[in-house]
Structures are given as C-alpha cells and as structure tokens.
Image (cartoon, rainbow, N blue to C red; front, side):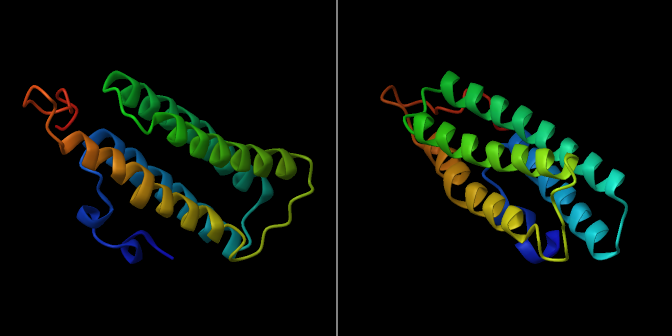
Length: 147
C-alpha cells in the first residue's frame, strides 16, 4: 500500500496541520520500510528505519497528548491507552530486530499501516472533530491549533 492509496491528504486530515504533517511522515517511513523489505534491503538500514519510526512516533504521541491535555479533551485517557499499545508494538519490533529474532518479508509490516490508518481515521479524527465543536462560551476549542 502506498500513501496515495490511503486517499487524498484531505481524506486523511484531522484538521490540525502539525499533526497531519506528522501522520504523513509516519506513513512515509512505514512505506519506506516496506519498500526496503520488498527489495531485500540490508538489516542495518531496516533497523535504522524501525528505530526512527519508534522515536518519531513516541515524540508525536507526546505532542498529541500535550495538545489534548491543553484543550481538556475528554477522550484523552482512552487515546493515551491506544498510543501505549502502538508504542509497545513498535518497541517490540525494534528489540526483536536488534536481537536478530525478527525475520521480515514483504507484507510483514502491513499491520503498521492498518494500525496507524485506523488510529488516525478514528481516534485522531475524533479529536479533530471535537476541536471544531463550540465551547460553552461560544468560542472554539482549538485555541489556534489549526494553522
């Protein structure tokens, strides 16, 4: 699956530019990994990309959670739980790869694409839609997050 196959940028957008850019970068790294595996790329490069994806994803999750906390998002606890599950899966991939106990073949990482896509389209989009709702005072919740 390629980035273009996921739909247009607007279809994958949650409406928060900074987070949308991060999501795109996550998908691009996953697809780069898939291409490398399919072409029989080296273990060292695969490990480097796995570690980059794990670090970037953890940083992205921290930013997202900070934004949610700042805007008093009521779904924060459940969202954090989902983040932890994804982060643990990525960490396990890195650990097993580094131990030489991970044999990747084309399609091995499809679950990452599907998992990230589901997270963005459901969990993150719920946050984007919640930001659009007016507050009790009539203003918007986004506090300038949408640029």
